[in-house]
Image (cartoon, rainbow, N blue to C red; front, side, top):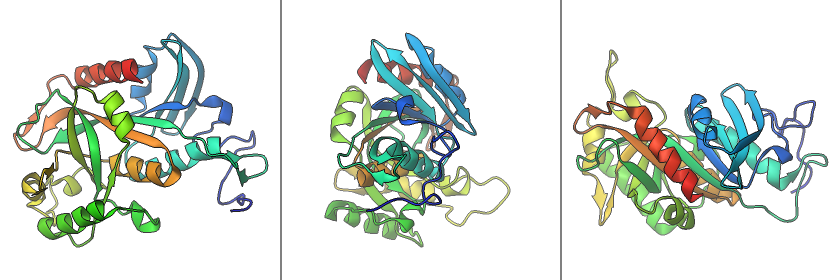
Amino acid sequence: MGKISETDLILNPDGSVYHLNLLPKNISETIIAVGDPSRVYMVSQYFDEVEFEMNKREFITHVGKYNNKRITVISTGIGTDNIEIFFTELDALVNIDLKTREPKPRRKKLKVIRVGTSGALQEDIPVGSHLVSDYAVGLDNLMSFYDLPMDDYETGLAHDIQKKAGLHFMPYVVKGSDELREQVGKDMLVGNTVTCPGFYAPQGREVRLPIRFPRLLEDLNYYHKGEFWLTNFEMETSAYYAMGRMLGHDVVSANAIIANRMKNKFSKNPTKVVESLIEKVLERV
């Protein structure tokens, strides 16, 4: 791969990447990613010191030290489209020489931990619990634009889920980092996460518009292949795992379960569930 054009990788006048507005010196090797920009402050309040801050659109970045380890926390906003931007520019910061616009000969691997909220798909997953994602199932179309390598097991699951859920498209299935899952998710529930391209119809919610897949919740709740069950819904994990695999970074998704969709229960204190997950992740990274 040669020099990357100015329109393929857009830089700001100060040389920073376009959306994140960051320079290579502005990030660490360990990244905590959150969806809600206000959650960045929930993480950085635990830092011993904050050495750098950047606010650009929904992408807010704080860099600091926790227990003498340098950590970056970045908000992404909602959805897999934002994760593509986040991951592409994050990777460019460590693996592309931004002055020559050429890939570096030695690839650098980042550790990226998503800390987000999610709704349970199984009755036995309690509201208020923490769940680490083993596999992600993408119902979004982001990977239609990439050549994501999937192994035979993942491909088989993708075809099977499409058939049994009656989908008009094939989802993609991708595993996260085993090493990070064991490190971050020691005592958490381990599950397989469904990533949706929206919050309402794509997650089986009907408000004022009729939805195309009225049995989606039930189909995904009942779905299993051997020991593989679908455990929770959210809106980003599949893109994290897919982009991480293709770019060569270690990624894991840690979920604060604030709702149980099968029981129609919502947490009375979702902030507390998220805060306890943040504390747990910080102690383990």
